[in-house]
Image (cartoon, rainbow over all chains, first blue to last red; front, side):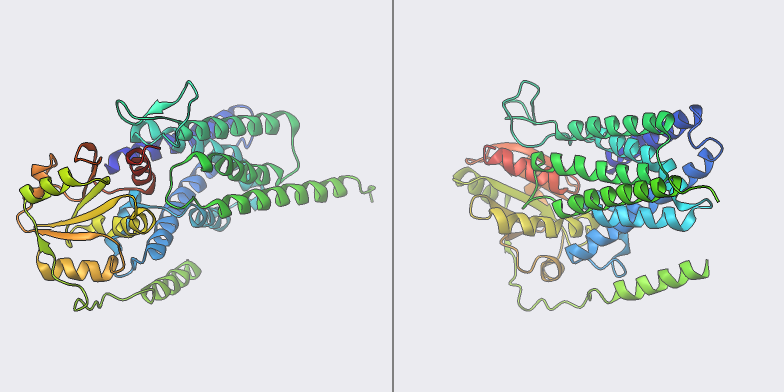
Length: 235
Length: 162
């Protein structure tokens, strides 16, 4: 039922909150954690709505004539459009320079996605393609063992979130680079786990490739720009 | 705020033009009536796995999963039999729904005015319901509530042996 979907969403939001708190306790984004939390909540809500509307349009259901269908979130949320909607709201509602906000949310967004995927446990929706590996689970008694693919995604995204947060705490990376790397990591994790997910005719791989390419390009460009500024002689 | 409202207005106007609600049901034939006994016999004699989706035209989640079932039937209709059982509905309502959401689907539609078939198959009076049957009629999974793509793909994969 939809309640399990809400529980998974709550785990994802808890992931965002915990990472923001963890970073604030280590002096990262200190002083603007509350702003970031507000922006993150708005982005999550907008992402779900935009992604759901896009999925309805693709499926041939008119969202204006059938507004009640919007709440049937389980029927599908278009991942790519949801991400674009969330990023648009982050840009629109930020009261601080966009790169500071994007970097502040980078690790938290990955932790939130990790929580969302980990929520498969309450949704009974962790399983993917069949496997002979010893940690495979069966969907039903006597069923075939399968990859717990959503757990793989949750673990990889959490590892990426922690690595990014630790780097931000210790390395002081150039502004904009953590945001780019977070986008690239999210795309990469979905890209590598997608072949293990059961789907009708393949998942939205194109979006994940685009996210990886865009994130990597942003990170590389910001790194070069800031490195060039640092190397300028003082006036 | 003004910019946001303008953007919202433009989005609503664009989305309103994405499709219409006027449907012509004349091309959709009346649905054949079925009974629990007929459905049980059909399942028992089927040599292919069968997916039975229980729906109604007044059911909002059914609208959302209809395109998914249509896609699944188009992809796997040669290996899995898809049956849509319309319950507690009118013929015109059912035909209107099919015309609007599933006109091209490779799904066999049946009509169960009193909603007795899902109860006989082990389900409830709720809609939507989706039963997954192995060849011979053994129930492998009953999905209560709306289907998502992963769940449908997973249980189809189970029916087809991975």
